Length: 380
Image 1: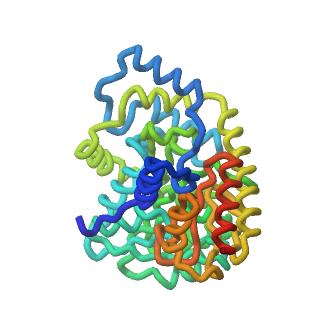
Image 2: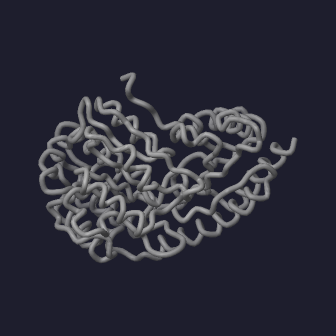
């Protein structure tokens, strides 16, 4: 158990809630979930499924109708041509990470992952007994993986490479040229790739790009995605993975041994999300775009702070090194002194030092309040 880490966003949320219970006003910019309601047609589909008695066990890989809907959705959105038998549905997207790493990695294997990056990558790799190897995401490189630096970290023990675009916590997005170079390395060094694309729909400029766009990469790549971010369904716990054929049966066995299956009624709601209107997603994206512009502009106006404009997701990752405080100290002071909950960059790895992560999944008014409080603290 000592190998297993945690996700500090929930720890900061608990501290913020405790302050609120004592009468403090807190602006919540720590939790990474859309602040929008699940679309009405999805709620209606779930209610209809409950009324029809879809409350029993279903096949471990997911109901056939949903696996087909996922494959059709990926084809329709131009992301991937695949077949339903390669799609596995899980309660949330995290199990796809967990099952992939547990199935592929053991003592002596190395897992390459982005740093800063989602903390579960390193945590689960370590829990499996593998060695997590951070691949630095540097601000001067736009917070994306430098293929040359990645190659310098690959060894004979490298087994799995984790990619994430659009990226949490930096908001960066990969380019086709970068992904071509990474695909060449994966092929040359026989790496399996896990591409985490849960924020794929939240791109502000241009199309979404994936390593799966490169010919032949589907045979060595696991696609991780879900409904949480795209459809504001975080509490529904719905995720899916698309696997190379050889991994489908082993991952299904892990599903059976751990969670049995994903709830039946929620899978019918998931079909409605994939096949229904896209208006709610578009509205959410436009709201995030407005908030992004407000928070990035505001952060760049704070003395001693600079912020790169994120290309996707809903996170700002400002550089605070000129303020002379560690990321953890500044995040603590923001919460305790001025009531702004955010995360230190070090919550996402050692290379996150000198940065904070703000989730702008909150109203423009609250974002402006947080920016004003941050500026007052910075100049005091």
